Image (cartoon, helix red, strand yellow):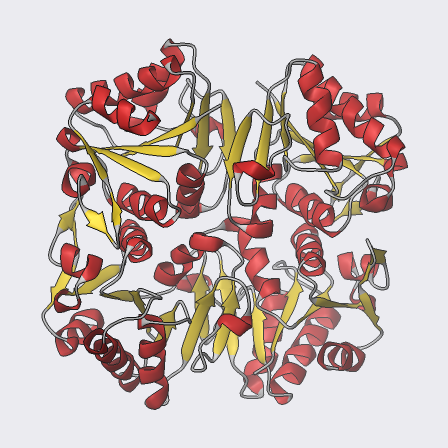
Amino acid sequence: MKQIAVIGSADDVTGVVEEMAEEIGRGIARRGAVLISGGRTGVMEASCRGAKAEGGLVVGILPKSKEQANRYVDVAIITDMGDARNVLNVRSADAVISVCGGAGTLSEIGLALKADRKVVALKSSGGVSGMLAGKTIAGKTILAAESVEDALKLAFE
Amino acid sequence: MKQIAVIGSADDVTGVVEEMAEEIGRGIARRGAVLISGGRTGVMEASCRGAKAEGGLVVGILPKSKEQANRYVDVAIITDMGDARNVLNVRSADAVISVCGGAGTLSEIGLALKADRKVVALKSSGGVSGMLAGKTIAGKTILAAESVEDALKLAFE
Amino acid sequence: MKQIAVIGSADDVTGVVEEMAEEIGRGIARRGAVLISGGRTGVMEASCRGAKAEGGLVVGILPKSKEQANRYVDVAIITDMGDARNVLNVRSADAVISVCGGAGTLSEIGLALKADRKVVALKSSGGVSGMLAGKTIAGKTILAAESVEDALKLAFE
Amino acid sequence: MKQIAVIGSADDVTGVVEEMAEEIGRGIARRGAVLISGGRTGVMEASCRGAKAEGGLVVGILPKSKEQANRYVDVAIITDMGDARNVLNVRSADAVISVCGGAGTLSEIGLALKADRKVVALKSSGGVSGMLAGKTIAGKTILAAESVEDALKLAFE
């Protein structure tokens, strides 16, 4: 089974970004892939909700305990490793889709490129995804997606 | 869903130990729990095969890549963290069942006790499980199981 | 004692970037701080060489073994944790100075901002340091240094 | 420079165990080696105090922040990785000396054996060191030391 990660902020996100994340989660599940995520709030929760709504399998890579998982997480991986868990989020994925995001997401994009994972950034979602979409870093390009459909297409092709 | 880890050696194991590990995997899946394991060979593979035979969900916490997973792993968590992944094996579990095992298993038993996870050691399986079954370390007891059935009962109660 | 990290590429770097990294290492040691670095080649080695030339103490956070350390490392921390060691590089530092760099450096900048460490990027060194110098990510600014002297001043003030 | 780790409980220890740990720290520094430790209280602090009294260099591998270090730590490595830092304690050492200890120390002994580090357990110090001194696990023996002098001799030879 393919495993696709959605990365982005744990903070409250605007309605539009939340809808994008949910739609991406739906698309991942509809294509038969496992969703890998940080398993918590914000962009993570929206993508998990989308995947679950389509009957997908949802993995949450959590900081400390099962109790931190949002209600859509099926498998809880407890790391107790602070930000080192970011490595797991991206290494466990065949491709990574980035939605908005801040410093944590920035580190995940770097770690994903380093691990030679495909990184797709949703340009219109803002944050570091908007900032880095289309940029090339040491010969590796962060693919710019113009829409949710485009992001899914790039991640799965 | 409950998550139960089976820990033990990646090396070739004797027929009896392999059967025990497979039976434990079967029992975990029959009780509706997710199997967490290192996802590779030896005791790990036997327990995964058992869980899969009963239609269970199998998570493999792998060192480097999906390719290292045995064929029964459904969800592959790639750590690229050497033995630090042992922390994930035990923290992600509600209870840990130990079968035979060497130095790696010893570290996982220590990490599980430290994390206040229930540890059940199958006494007759030998290795560090045989050595530590029933022992108390800094006030925490490694529960001694006399049989596979006993190990499952202790892990789930 | 203050601890300052220098981050940047392990790859061969141009003469100018190498000189910058060496000068930064010198400046860190002259100000009585410990140099934290990945302990290997490229920017890391140049900064270690500089610190050592001024009698500084050099810590190398290494991937696998002591043998990977460049000859200027005094204390070798062996992680066996792949890119998760990037967390250690930046968390162990009071401030982080970024010189040129690719995907790994990008992840370290993200991890440093997340950990609320001061990040100073040497603008003229190119790479991700040039790309991100002066940028603000989720309310946290990567300080832009116009020169080595400026970078040291920003890191220590 | 050689790097020797002293592992053992962070909890209050009895006067005798504390003296042993301090003496081991002194011996490590007198032999010109760097002391690697968890950098905190109990056995860790006693060994750091001993090393410092002899002018040694003391590295503390800390869980969260510099503030957790005891006053004898020269170089603070901040991990923010929970028990995964145990991997660093033992991998960074050429040899590991175990004094008393509980579940955390048990995990470190397992991780050290797995990494093919020499492990010396001070038999009379009790805890897991007393329990495992002289035991062989999967072909690897935990060396039993009868005294502090013996432990140092075994670690350095």
